Amino acid sequence: MIVADDRAGLLKARETLGIGAGAFSGGSALALVPTMGALHEGHRSLIRLARERAAHVAVSIFVNPLQFGPTEDYSRYPRTFDADLEACAAEGVGVVFAPSAEDMYLPDRQVGVSAGEMGSVVEGEFRPGHLDGVLTVVLKLFNLVQPDVAVFGQKDAQQLAMIRRMVADLNLPVSIVGGPTVREPDGLALSSRNRYLSRDDRVAALALSRALEAGAGQALDRGDGADETRVLAAEAGRRAPAEIRRAALAVLEAEPSLVVDYLVLVDPATFAEVGDDHTGEAILAVAARVGSTRLIDNVTLDIR
Image (cartoon, rainbow, N blue to C red; front, side, top):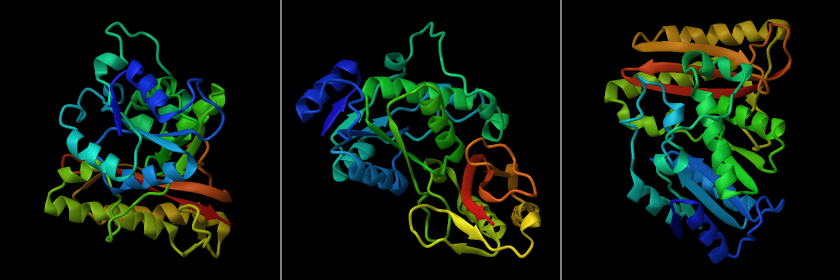
């Protein structure tokens, strides 16, 4: 496994692995899994998915300062680089790209990516500028690593949707693949921030996944195993979105230690709230603070 920290190192890695020097070959030579490190089984599942899609896999490890607000946890975000390298090696990763912030951003940086109106809602409402920072670093990683495929987790559903929109809007020749959320046996979505949780906090955090299950209501697995979509078999289809929100909110309100930022039912492509007459796919998403830790989760529903 090759570890690179700059463009020159990446070019040498491509040469060593026999990956063509030209960017964006249009084939399936190289898949990228962008991460901020502190790798867990969710990340490892994305690496395995990447290995199914390309001959070689690169993993980036970079805690991106642009996507953290001034009062957020950038300085204390878990950094476990040695353990991350061991995990990457065990999963057969060919290249780890681990740049410094100084390598990624000029001190007088002026140009970045705007997430637009879609980036100002849901997560963007509560974390202004966050999605601008995500898109900026992802575009830079695409330019530096030059992957044919990039794999992201569905747990960050709005981030995944925004990256797909950026690729479409900017005509980037990269195929975007979403990987399903990996959960603990009790339903808690895996997150690098879970390690912040105290024992009591962790119990309270289970309300997020329980709320999503309650919102899904009479949900049935679609059965194709391709994604996390649930089919909602509601008796009154036109009232289904309101019922979904109400059932999920009741679970959240029953957990007094949660501070809820949002519970929304949105269009997967635009992240605009869906109306009560909506049919088709929708994402039920939640964000809440448990103690000092902010967690997010979501599930995709097919409302018929």
